[in-house]
Amino acid sequence: MRVDFGGGWTDVDIFAHGAGGVVLNATIDKYVTGRIEVMEAGEGAQAREGLAVNYGFDLPSGSGLGTSSALNVVWLSLIKSQITASDEDRKHIAELAYQLEAMLGILGGKQDQYAAALGGFNLMRFGAEGVEVERLSVPPETVRELETRTVLCYTGKPRLSGSIHENVWGAFRQGNPATLSALYALRDIAERMKTVLLEGDIDAFAGLLSENWRNQKALDPSVTNQQIDDLFTAASQAGALGGKACGAGGGGCLLFVTRAGAREAVGKALAAGGARVIPFAFEFDGLTVSAQK
Image 1 (cartoon, rainbow, N blue to C red):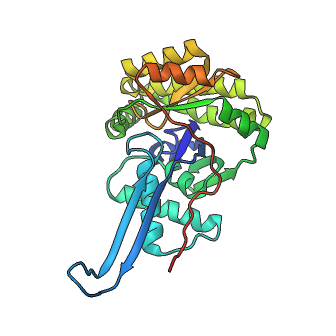
Image 2 (image 1 turned 30 degrees about the vertical axis):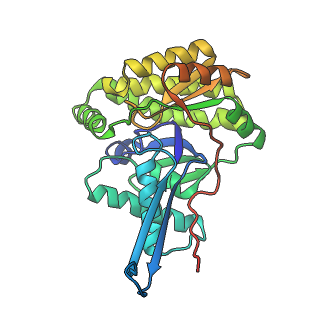
């Protein structure tokens, strides 16, 4: 699964094909797993023949961490029986997963599929010509500092991204100035985030998270609610420098970057506000497929 730092929404074709979208995200050690097993006919009342497919989720669907798209990446990998040998293999699976969702009428972007397939820190650019992924070599000391200053929490309520998407893209098609301004700002924030992240400036990174959140909220009122606002207030008072809702918002997970040494205090404040803090580390392997006998 992934956390999206900046630029979310701009990966949706409605915007990206004309203006070009940019997203900065990273994968974490929370997974969707799948297993396909060939069952051969045997003896006895319990004998079964055919295929058995099982899935596991570390976090619920609706968390805002790309769970549904990660599931589609897993499912396609299983039915294709494709061992992922390269980034090109992973990108192919990611694109197929997006096309599957589009065929099902799901209005969304491409960052989740590509993040699940590739893993690590990535700056993704989306346009009419396809997806360009810039793999970011974030210094190990920066990754460690970010992990010690980041708090991820689940609000306890899944976000309903479908209705939010309909509202936002309806406003976009109508040329709503506030919506247009927010989308262009989100795209530019992702580019600026890349710079400060590679420079190791975590304080500046936290500030850009908050700037991203202000523009997220400008897209549609349903991106936030009283519970989310209260959690942001509690986190800020406990030492959070910046934060945002993951994914479309409206529920799911929230991500905060704290002052040095304030991570525990922020986590306690969020837990006291009714949220579930989710410990995590960043992950760099992406989709892994293996065959077992």
